[in-house]
Amino acid sequence: MKYKLLSILIGVGGLILISRYVYGSDKYLGIFKVTGYCNDKECTGKSPGDKGYGITKSGKVAKWGMVATDSKVIPLGTKLKIEGFDTIFVSEDIGGVIRKNKIDIWFSSHQDALDFGRQKRKVWTVKQN
Ligand SMILES: [Zn+2]
Image (cartoon, rainbow, N blue to C red; front, side, top):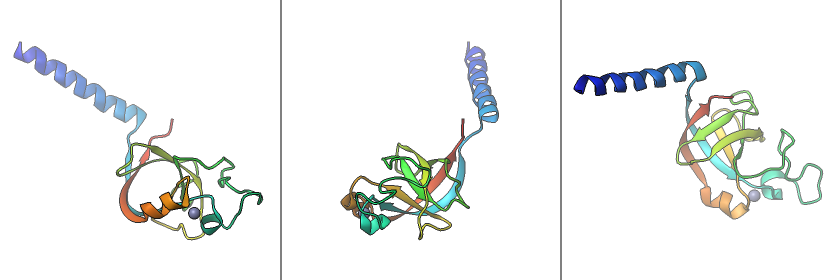
């Protein structure tokens, strides 16, 4: 009976390895300097009514789960895991000061962005489907 359990465990482990190989796995990118931004003038230079207000570089209405990245480092459309969050983020935006290992998380209010502040977090890409 012990061997049966062992062979089941090996079987399950093998399936996980195979599916990781077939479907890919998360790739660790390193530690990023993560900040927050919102739609307001202070963060984006745009006010309500301005062209492109609240719209990301990718043309979407900015909402929770979207981040700005340096598109040379993390191309638009990349799915990301950021340490400390359950959300799978998507790079939808860019920013003048968002260069290299910086990520800007979109928040619905300026206060939330300020409260988040500036933090160093581990970042992974999530395999695209
Ligand atoms: Zn703001």
